[in-house]
Amino acid sequence: MHDAARRVPQQRTSLGGVVRGGPPVVTYTIIGLCVVSWVLQLVTGGDWTRLWWFAPVIGEQEPYRFLTSAFLHSPSPLHILFNMYALWITGPFLEQMLGRWRFVALYLLSAIGGSVGYLLLAGGPLSETWYQPVVGASGAVFGLFGAILLVLRRTGRNAMQIVVLIAINFAIGFFFSGIAWQAHLGGLVVGLVLGAAYAYAPRERRTLVSVAVTSVVAIGLVAATWLTYATVPQVLGG
Image (cartoon, rainbow, N blue to C red; front, side, top):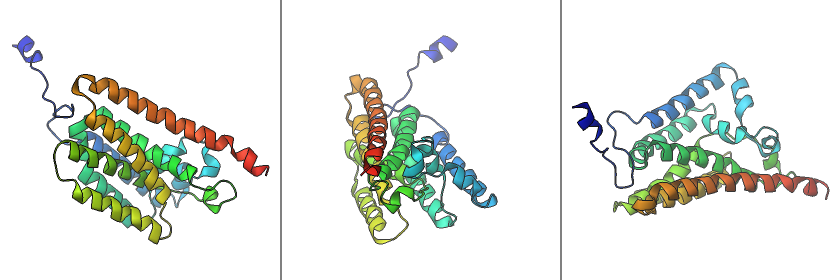
């Protein structure tokens, strides 16, 4: 009986994710970490925020901030509520369709991509943006937006609502101050690249393509960051 049960193949989605019962564990975990972090920001009077926020001026010495800033939010509850709602409506579907490891890679690399996008478009050390701290999961959320757009199209679902949502939220970054549109763009680009790889990889090469493209994106983010910081002394030197 036990041997027979072990031989039953796992059910998988059309994109290779394992069909699991129960709640979307990864999505819930990310939401929980963001909420706990936000509470710590409030109760420490901002000390927790200063430990983990990202700004281009400090990213080279403390690169972990490229990721940790994505688990912080502004004191206003609207910021975290919007991002967590966006994660709530996109995360479970992507987690199920792609499987847990690809969903984790998508979220984390999109979060880092948001910080890298902010770095690349900050304007260098002569710009105020270079010294402006940023927080928020928006880069990761835009990565999910980009990925779900392609997953919906690949599976024959209507993606127009996501297109409109991306356009509206991206436009908001240009019309309201205090919103890092650069991070939105960085996360979106990463999400589109990974989403294309995860959704359109041939079934027989799905694992190979997913691992290869994920690795290339990660290396590309590191390379772009290194090259950007490598030019800083030249800029400062005139």
